[in-house]
Image 1 (cartoon, rainbow, N blue to C red):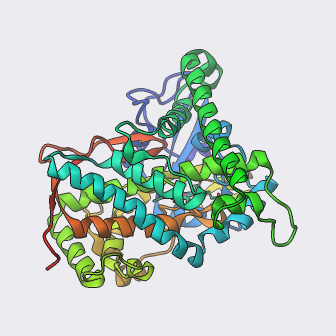
Image 2: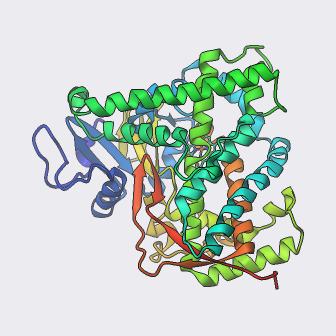
Image 3: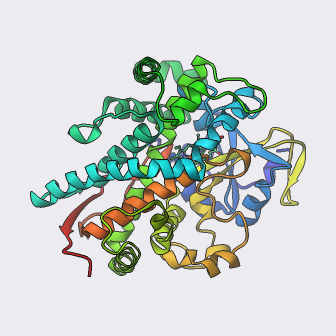
Amino acid sequence: WPELHRIPHPPRRLPLLGDVLGVDRRRPLQDSLRFARQLGPIFRRRAFGNEFVFLWGARLAADIADESRFAKHVGLGVANLRPVAGDGLFTAYNHEPNWQLAHDVLAPGFSREAMEGYHRMMLAVADRLTGRWDREQAAGRAVDVPGDMTKLTLETIARTGFGHDFGSFERERPHPFVTAMVGTLTYAQRLNTVPVPLAPLLLRGAARRNAADIAHLDGTVDDLVAARRRSGGGDGDLLDRMLETAHPETGERLSAENVRKQVITFLVAGHETTSGALSFALYYLARHPEVAARARAEVDRVWGDTAEPGYDQVARLRYVRRVLDESLRLWPTAPAFAREARQDTVLAGEHPMRRGAWALVLTPMLHRDPEVWGEDAERFDPDRFDAKAVRARPAHTFKPFGTGARACVGRQFALHEATLVLGLLLRRYELRPDPDYRLRITERLTVMPEGLRLRLERRTAPS
Ligand code: HEM
């Protein structure tokens, strides 16, 4: 950034340390949102000698989405996950051959036909969730929304992708895989908030725990792969693709080490963010009974009294899907992505960048830019996603799944799963919020509504 000085920064800077005054180390994203509100559509923060550029203005975000001049940057939190996920699809550098290879081999695992195959398994997992919620409801207890959504989404990706059952619903505490995963995500986030040279000293205990967490994740995955090899193959799921499928043109296959990294990648990327998206959607549905009533009426109309909705009946829940989009607008659960210049260029005709210079796109702010979303951008309103409103908006202003070649490969999977589950829950329960609950956000690279509990009432038959 040759003209970095033109980009605003927080007013009070400390020598060596940078902009760390008043910063909450456990909530780096929410700090950045605060700075964004003070400093405008592009700003920078310095921490321990490194300068980071953040942007969220719609015009800037649209320009940086140009794939001919910019690409994904593997930096900060994503780079900190390399010890966990190596050159797996999410953490691979653009130039690593394993990205293209794995992308070409695995992307067909998310085709429409593949998705249709997952649908029944998704229903079976959702059945275990409603079984649990029926029991909680009958006992007069509130349900732990993020905890139970995490059980659901972990079981769903494990079952559909890898033919594996973690038994999450049979446990009171989170599965040790989840505990290890949360540990590694939290550690990767903390690494951003200490000076790099001091990290080994300051985080010694945490680094030891992190190494143990990674060993646990590796061990879980090695067991899962060994079981598949013993059984001689599954039903063409993601794991089969990873183990058996050769690249359609080069004939190359994923190496054993790369398979390990891909399985971890998909188990983690495939459930944490979807769990957050479902949790926020349930939060907003409980807070907006009029929206819940409209969504529920749609479910009753589209699904009628079919015991199990079919694959196509999920895509027809247009309003439920808007509720989900609107939740992902306000709280995109992977709340930033990084982009770098492929060559020397000028961002939006204003900010010169040298090849390799990079910036973080802050999606929760992009999704609240008043120039695009209006002065009431903070208000929850699913009608922002009706077809007419969507057509009227400029491109690249809604980016919960990232952008370009490195955008989320699991997008359709997440949307199908979440819409299906919201439909099932709306059909079965009325959601009662705790009037004292105030939304608080936990951060571990992803975001999640902290401590959200809801009370349920069983509905009688659909009207
Ligand atoms: C990439 C968000 C669900 C697998 C991404 C990226 C975002 C994202 C923002 C781009 C990151 C970057 O540019 O650095 C989300 C959200 C989800 C979700 C918000 C749920 C609501 C899923 C699911 C899967 C998945 C269900 C797998 C089943 C991946 C993978 C990548 C990725 C493998 C890396 C793709 C590549 O670089 O080739 N996701 N994701 N995600 N996501 Fe998702």
